[in-house]
Length: 287
Image (cartoon, rainbow, N blue to C red; front, side):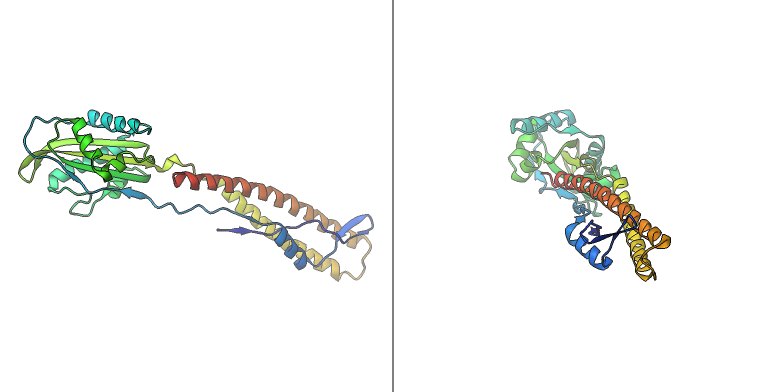
């Protein structure tokens, strides 16, 4: 976090010399007073930890019965459950679908039924491979010979962890895969739901605005140094009148005007940036 707490304020104690105003004061004291009266902090983006929700895989019936699962039907039944519970339907996402398909294929290929493969590949790794940048992802797994898509969803909804995943209000998108194959000698279905909320759902603060604030702050520090130098020069002049003296005071007062104008501009930029930061943090937290 960068602190921005320097300021120049017009104060009492000016003297008129040859029609020019000299803000006569100890500059260190001046900036000290300004520091107390003008404080603006550049807001800090909270570090948002990517969230992964993965309840224990659901083992269903493995007896051979007339069974047929479809990707379209599973997606439809998932959204029906959400709308029945007052939640918006999830939008099918190609990258999440690729994740779900890769997961189903991998489980049959390597003969495991877990969120993490024998080689340690989990949902976050699948998301990275698929190019899905997320704030939160969730994964539901099911294995068994479910009669149809509705029966599959009923089984997931009867499992507290899977139900919570399906009805999680943070999710915006989904990918589904269903596949039939041989697992441990049994012909069964494997079903995968990949839920997600993309990182792009929350707008980051304007980077150009942040850079302009940094540039302005550097300029303000430069102006402070010039003011301190001019103040020393003015105090060191043998005569407090005449052309040289008046010119130095004019330069000094011009710099004060520049400083105050730049300070006000920068304060407004910081307020704007902080508002954007707050909006991002609230969005990313899901509030």
